Image (cartoon, rainbow, N blue to C red; front, side, top):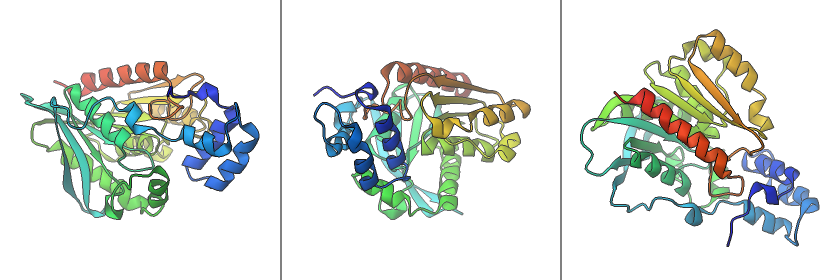
Length: 296
């Protein structure tokens, strides 16, 4: 079955879905609100199902791909949740020290899509590591709605520290060159911005449609930033101008791109909000950015 695109849905439907997946409204509120925008005989429930991620259909790299070495590893997280776990992927038989990329998931934990993203990065000759913020609550539960509910139970301060510690552990990873970049999506984009304020040794940060760092913390940023925004993402874009101005005033090397007429989550190819052209361009820029700042 052909996956629908954002153009198949009323704009208000997409706005309600964004509110739902970020916990601003309940499932019942979404179904009630979207009922007036049903199209082509689709019920409100059918619309929700159509917008829900399809991990199998979108997978690009199999977990067992022989070109990669993948495993789950635990790491200590002092000041965080004590002990965490992440998905570590390396190119098979890699020679010489490789650059390192921390991958930060959305607000559902380490789901199959983020694992696939991690494998894609590793295939470009990086060591990629994706922690699971839900590890202390049992890990990603295999269901997006359950994952969102679990996420609400996390201690935000400890969870941020878990990612700080992950970056520090990754920097000393065997086979790595010590240069760590971070890429994050949605919640993870906010974490990418946050890590840039906390880790002066961070070599590069790429937030995709993520919450901006606190403006007072911007002068602490030493890493270059490549920032991706979705044109139709009012919730995140509201802070973009002030953030760009603060970055410029602090002398931070930063470049931001807004991709017109696309939705929050446009890089996530498991849902209809995915936009192939914008995602391809943003990913090309991301990989070029990491190659520029993490190699050599």
